Structure formats: C-alpha cells, structure tokens
Image 1 (cartoon, rainbow, N blue to C red):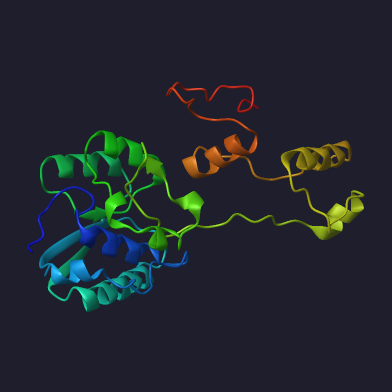
Image 2 (spheres, rainbow, N blue to C red):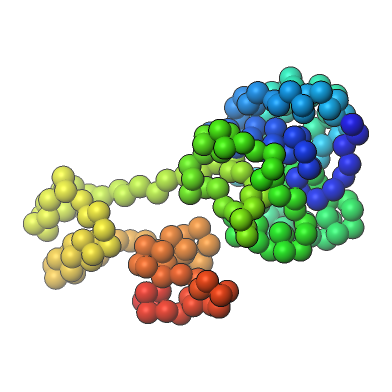
Amino acid sequence: MKLQRRSLFLAHAIAGVVLLLLGACTPAAPSGTAPAADDSASAGGFSGELIMWRFPLMDDQDAETAAWNEVIASFNEEYPDVTVTIETQPWDDRRQKLLSAIGSGRGPHVFYMNPDMISLFAQNNAIVSISDFVTDEELAKFNPGTLIPWEGKLYALPILQNSIVHVYNTDLVTELGLDPENLPATMEEFEQWATVAKEQDVFMSTWSGGTATSGLTALIWQFGGEIYDEDGNVIIDSPETVA
C-alpha cells in the first residue's frame, strides 16, 4: 500500500506503529524500540515516504538527531519499504505553519505537538483519530495523565514527559524552625511554611512564575482552578486562579 500524504496521522495500523514507537521514548531524548507490529499491518505491505516534522527539544541537536535515527531504524525493521524523513522546523508560528501546510496538502504525516494544540487541530479536521488503531494493552504502557482525548477520541500519544522537583536549603529550613524531613505535601501546607518564612523575612520560593502553558496550568489546577468550564466558557479569572 502506498502511503498517501494526509493530515497528522496516517489512518490504519501505520499510525499506531509510528506513534507507539515515538511514545516509547525516554524523557531525555526520543529513542527506544518499536512495539511489535500488528500482523494485519505487516501484511499490508506499506511503502513510500513518511514525513515527520519535529521541533528542537535539546540543546545538543547532534544527540537529538542520533536519537531519532535510532527510532527510524527500529521502525524500518518492521517496515523496510517505508522511507522516514524527519524535518526540523522552528518553534515560531508552528501552529499556523502546520495548519497551512496541511490545508495545502503539503503537510507532514506525523508531527510533534503540544497537548493544548490537539483540540484546535481536531476541530479543523487537520488530524486523524488513532483510537481504532491502538489497543488497550498498548495504552496501558503510558501514564494515563499523558493520554489526552478530544471528545472521546485519541489523536496523539506522548513521546516524553518530565517531572518538576523541589530543591531546598535544609540548613535554612531548619533555622526557620521547620522540619526538612517533612516537606509540604499540599498547597495548604506550603502556605503554612511560607507564612513562617515570611515572618522571618525569608522568601519561600524564588520562582516568579511565567506565561508558558506547561507552567501556568499546573499552578491553576494545583489551586483548584480551571481554564474552561464544561460548556467551554473561559473561567481563568476565577477566585482559585487570581493571585
């Protein structure tokens, strides 16, 4: 079967194979081994060129390119007649560039996207759902929180995730009369610690916030807020969100 240039994900098993391959990567850099391909997919005899757009995720681009080459090699073990070409694109204006390329029929088959882009592209019919091509067993390999459906359908699988950790000065915490072995586990406990620190003219945190979605949404949810309600109304200015 010749690969046709469509939208984000190729329909049929090729989508599941490619995306599961990407999803199996480690947070440090995209790498890994592809899961076993479905027999029906292998029998399909896919051939042609598969284009993927990626956006730089590492300072060391040579290392990142090498990691993607490992991914391609693993994929080609199952699909030797498919030529995978990964094109590096700039982050600037990526949404509009992707939508324009897809709309003109020159878009990639697969591309890296941020979670908040899924609904936009799905509403514009710019991506294809992969729900029918990924099994529950395959989905069980991922952290449930990284699987983001839109209107009950899955359009993407994660290729990386990271964790934010607390770094603190144990000596200073002790001087404040707090227990460095019993750190705050909730925002209420964090506020209690912050109050103790403020009373002694010490700032609890040096993090000044930011406008990146990945940082802002985490704080909004931590304080019990939401960006939209169930009807799609913007509620980002709710009491839980406003400082």
